Length: 411
Image (tube, rainbow, N blue to C red):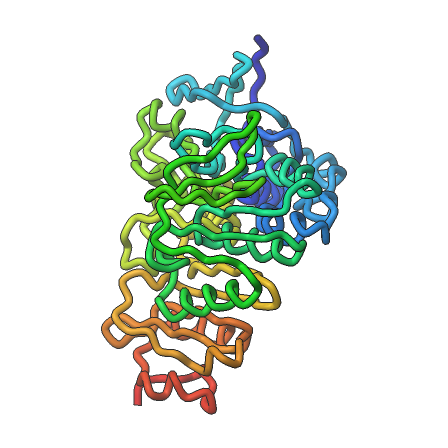
């Protein structure tokens, strides 16, 4: 067992963990910084895992957030392949799975989450994969040469993106979604139906209301998915994209407030002294969700919260008030989302989905709260101002593609 100390200890080497270290140095923080990550790699981008990296279009070196020399030159130490299993907030100490202890002045918890796994029989067979880490995707890629048929369980962004890439690689893909439409938790029905049609047009078998009973086995490997009702879909690979479980167990055990994530205030502070949190694992009162506590799983949220935390630590506080935004690439479609559509009471179609360039504008009580823009970057850029400004607008004018969204207000 060894003991060390860092002025700022960052747990988690993803986007948020990397960005908070960068932001601290940009703001001339002169103390020691140590970033501890579970994976053997230094920080890298996760979004390309289900896109360019899986497709073989980007080498791993091209998705590193920064090259190794960057961290060395800025005095940011990296401890990889280590998982923090407990936190002692009174002693300002954490313990790793190896039994080593690390003292800290400030602790920043940016551990993200772990891919949610199936609980049915066969969930741990060879050939069953999640898409959360480089190791996950490398293993998938190593099996592609002997894979003809793939079942993707989950019709969220990860599942749809993986399905698009694997279809382009010539695989026979089936998407199994337990709800009555894909993207049901994050978008309106018109967008769901559009993406279902797009995937089907590319040869994907999209099954809705599909309940998985178990994964079938042959010689220790997955060989099919059995649905409720008894139908078996033969396949050589199963990809599970059913969300994440926030990695906050050590903080909860140490007494931090939270539930579905660790609770933070507008400056990224948890209820534990000198402990901050950010990224996928952090639950905050987002101003674009009517102040309701939510977790936002996006690079934007991780990066913006990292800046908020860094500013708090260096004594230049500024509360978090960033508007959430997301993106997804599938086939030749680029979806850009701004705002949170949860709780909308109206969805206005701007353009024609048949042209494969359109937007959905979401409203609540007459106010624009979010946009989903498919191959419509101008709408995304201009619509962001409507969301930030909480603009009340005439739905008929929003639907009129001959009128730009910029400066649009209720007549």
